[in-house]
Image 1 (cartoon, rainbow, N blue to C red):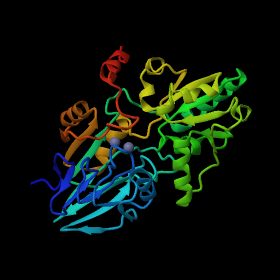
Image 2 (cartoon, rainbow, N blue to C red; image 1 turned 120 degrees about the horizontal axis):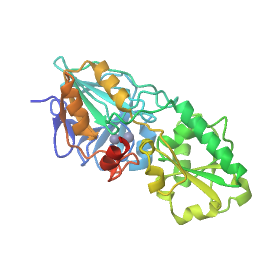
Image 3 (cartoon, rainbow, N blue to C red; image 1 turned 45 degrees about the horizontal axis):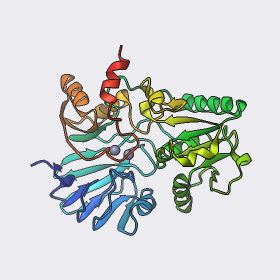
Length: 344
Ligand SMILES: [Zn+2]
Ligand SMILES: [Zn+2]
């Protein structure tokens, strides 16, 4: 029997009697991070990193949540677990599970570039590694984040010269904080949508010293934000909420923007390929660093990534999960065919 089983409720550790990121309510849930496809309501108790705890409370409401530190050993049944930084968003953790000398690591979502907020990804040696594969195709290769931030600033400045407000679409948990942090010196003031404001407040209440942002309300005078940078979640894109910004330019911040034509297809003026997931090279780097004998590949380009690993001497298998369903960085329906199109 595997130490972690793939069940219809999620990743299950029988000797420890807990699930990792279950998609159905269970008795004991260990949570990698607070994105909605990994952290779902209704379980009896939760365990996560203490940075994730306030975010989980915001998203799930009142639940029993135990917060732990990174590298802190926790006993669950016959198993010892510990959490290790995944570098994906604030609080995001890999879960290390040890039983009778056998070690498994569940990555959740991860990236290798240090964003200054999430705590850098820590490679953890294991026998079996469960990896995401959101951007598990060789065409995905991120530029250094500093270059992307510079591109955004140039875009904002150009829009301002043309009398336009810049509206940047970014997922409210993760990407928005990364942008606010990365642009704090160059794009003041920064205005945010209420959904991003709520997360900002929760993090500040939890002790995070985040750069100042201004919340946009129906009463915010137009001349306050005219020509400035506004950050809004994907739900606001193309909604009546955007009308107040006319004339404006819209940009999307997502790894999918690396694929040519995506920005145009989404009917926005600019696309910035900034992702909180590992690109192809980083996925391979992470897998090698674990020295795992066996890799299980979850949500994303499972078949392409696991095939590549198998062909290159690392035993890998695809695993079907329900992750990736509600997150912004889920592959758009047509991603596969579009990816082929850009390889010309
Ligand atoms: Zn995520
Ligand atoms: Zn995910």
